[in-house]
Amino acid sequence: MSNPDASGILARPLAGGSYLTEGRPGLSGWLATHDHKRIALLYGVGITFFFLLGAVAAALIRLNLLTPAGSLMSAETYNKAFTFHGVVMVWFFLIPSIPATLGNFLLPLMIGARDVAFPRLNLFSWYLYVGGGLFTIGALLLGGVDTGWTFYTPFSTMFSNSHVILAVVGVFVVGFSSILTGLNFIVTVHTMRAPGMFWFRLPLFVWAMYATSLVMVLATPVLAMTLALIALERLFGIGIFDPALGGDPLLFQHFFWFYSHPAVYIMVLPAMGVTSELITCSVRRRIFGYKFMAWSMLAIAIIGFMVWGHHMFVSGQSMYAGIVFSILSFIVAVPSAIKVFNWVATLYKGDIDFRAPMIYALGFVGLFMLGGLTGLFLAATALDVNLTDTYFVVAHFHYIMVGGTVMAYLGGVHFWWPKITGRLYPEGPARFAALLMFFGFNMTFFPQYLLGYLGMPRRYHAYPEPYQWLNVLSSAGASLLAIAYLMPLCYLAWSLRQGRRAEANPWNATGLEWTVPSPPPTTNFALSPVVTEGPYEYRS
Image 1 (cartoon, rainbow, N blue to C red):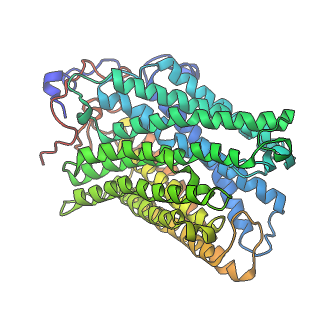
Image 2 (cartoon, rainbow, N blue to C red; image 1 turned 90 degrees about the vertical axis):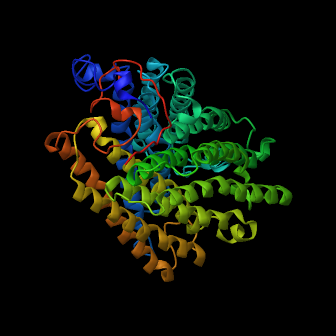
Image 3 (spheres, rainbow, N blue to C red; image 1 turned 180 degrees about the vertical axis):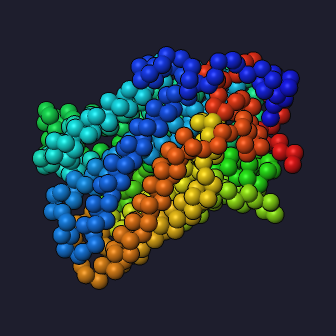
């Protein structure tokens, strides 16, 4: 990708240590930092905290569903548990997970820049994230919210007695964090690329961040507007969604899903970018169909804005609109299929390195394929009428959002961990955790496909006895999944003190981020690198 000897990157690293030791010492130095790498770690701490909170709520849900009567929680408490789980996992973990952490850390390094375009705005976006999280935690501590993570009207505006406004404000605030992050990334990619870093010399992870940022900037304001309208109707009785006042409750669904389906790609596109980097490095060859991979990311981002109505096939919308949205939902699967085909073609007859990052990447491909194929079931109107609001939808959502995105996120964390920390983790436990995660995830959520096919509705705290054995199997899988999620926290934390020191490029990978020391200096590069070739020019 570059000529390190000509650019002087390796020959003349900046003196004075790494970004972890340079700058103002102590906690105040971190809380006031403008360094994109430190801000990435601040995000990493935040999303790990919210992931654990959401996981606790998920554990309570699975424990309650062990018995048909739902003996652990009342119906109202159960509603609050799955609402909190959904709100926290979607907006405070899944959406910011890869862009705010790996994206923040790697994007400037990958394009040869010294930081993002707006460092102060980057730090401000983290404070918005924390502020939104505090509002959401406040809603939990004061009694919770029982509307579901989608805040559907008219329940959220007219009937719920829980702390809807506080939760809505939390999501509203964190939405602006996403907007600012996306804006920062777009400007950075356009204006701060190193000499010779043309568009089709960008790593696919950068393409993924760019496409994701477009969705963040264009879709998230619609969510903010929708949440503001909920607050206005709930507080002042303005007839926006209330039919008694001349409003339309379906209008909320159109607004919400116009944001929330593109938000699926805010979670998945970065995972696709990470997976592309892991596969090409592990097989040590150029990615098959690089330009098709880049264009398909933009195609997913664009077409993703046109399919929101497939969430509303049973809402009473026009039959003709349903047909159009169904066709578009099948079309958006085409660029995703291109990516899977190109990953498989890259692997074909390759000498694959099955270390932990690659196992996570293959786990993403497998879970994403199964989730995507079942998405085609839901895109067919005749099938969706029977499957909507059942556990089939829950399983499909989790295969894509949680199974796919989390596997890719952890694969990226393992791959770039030596660069981020300067330490190596133990490979054996990492491989075992990746395999256990794949097995535990399938054991947790595949039974839910069967439950949905058999007709068990989602969001019910009790259910008929014939469904119990599948719910017990799902809860048993969740216990394995919990162990698999906790293992990386343990051995990665251990590696910070006990892990062997990492070289600048322990994977022998291409890319500008691997030409600087591990961990990198504060300003990344001593001299601006000069890019002379494509991103994946492996020679061995």
